[in-house]
Image (cartoon, rainbow over all chains, first blue to last red; front, side):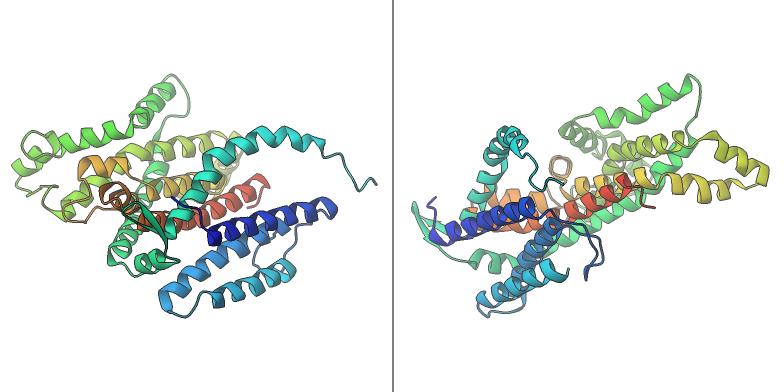
Length: 87
Length: 288
């Protein structure tokens, strides 16, 4: 098995996001709250929910259309920011 | 207030982090890597999301997923009420309690492949007690050639194997209800149904939620028992997700599609894990 650049970028991004979330948590501890999502969430919950939703969005995209995967990736990035801010 | 607490304790978590990295994260990374590659004559090609696209439109996967959900919901629909009913019927005091609990818990102590073997032999129409008796009674039963019979055998086996878990959890919930509730119900002249509906069921809510989620997760990942009893047949009628995955990975050595399928399976399980986690958190905080 050969490790490829796309998978490396994927995992490095996830790792950096987790590191960023950890630093953010240390600097400014999260406060559970209820936003647009129908449940009380911490920042980590919202991050997890947005990542998981992003994965499912990609799968749904592949199921329903042949359009490039950059589109769901962009939607996921915007969605992640929105969930973290208002979720 | 000190806004910069001492975080040195986090270093104590390092050994666990290393362990998890080697046991879970690195294998997961490998699976992701496989899911994006094709192997041809020892050469690896990056194929992007091709395996995912292929699998998402695969009738075999849709069939296995559909069967998996039907199986999980069927066994839950039987095990939950049956488990509660048996727990209600068990004695509450005396030496009979230990005896009954041990007898009820016996199926849980049997290894999964042995459970499969027991039911595989039990259901055989030539030498199995169950299959032979049914045929002697005039009921045409053959789980190796009839899909309905195969399903029936697997569902009954799963119910036999795992209902005891629901019984034990429900019984623990019932035992935790203080006598004062029953005394108050007696004074009010409450019927047995009213006692169950307004005292026992609400008080068992926590343990029943745990039982429901545990059983769902477990049944959703079932592999050994149906593999031993029917091998996924007849045809594909009892091929569930795990068996389909094993067939792809080990039977056909299609590592790319198998890895892509593993990730889809993992994402399904992750959703249920999160629901499980939130439900347990709610119970821990005393949510109604």
